[in-house]
Length: 273
Image (cartoon, rainbow, N blue to C red; front, side, top):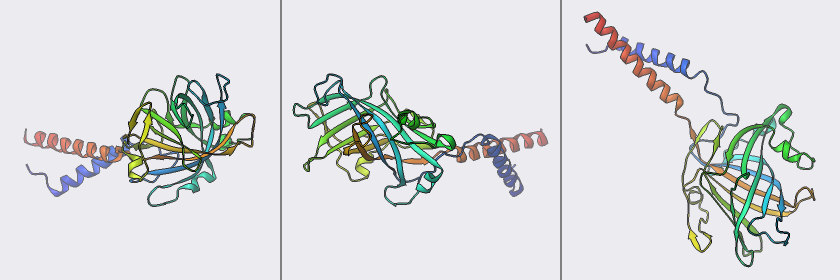
């Protein structure tokens, strides 16, 4: 039996109904992001240099930790603005990175994520929208919201800090996500290449180029922190991810349509059995 027009419509309705039932628990993203292009999160923050061997130099074994607050959310290529959400929400981070290598002149540093290290972002709203880098509990305030995105030890992570020709430093990082509560799939791609940025860097005596990852960030030092001795440096940077819509909606519709077709076949068999 060829399914008629009425049967097709019935299957479609049944598919949508099943989609609604199965998708009731699908959460709306806490922070809406542009999809189909790289999302840029601009941030500023404060960083503490922990000189574990007390030699006054950033070398292997030392730690940098601190807090940042996202100040702008936009599409990296279109410039589409999504920062209005930050009026009643905040996106903050508490981070800790370990120095794993350095050049003899300290113009080149390498960072890793060792046990206890992380770069986690949180969404604060209501009473947890309380970030204040000058507060004595700034670290706690930066991490008292809902965990939104996490980069923790385990997946791929590579980070280098290099002295630039103008004397400034530039920290570049490539990372895969450990925790993703954004409500979006985060695509792995050569993000730095897509953005037209220099991807070549050295790890030890090896030259590396672009990596296909879920996130990259560029970080620079703006000067000494005004909140010493709690923090050492004032920093700023950009964090980039490539969000794509979760396929849940289309997947549920297809499941529903498949179920509707099977239902019609069963009905037809019972009629002609």
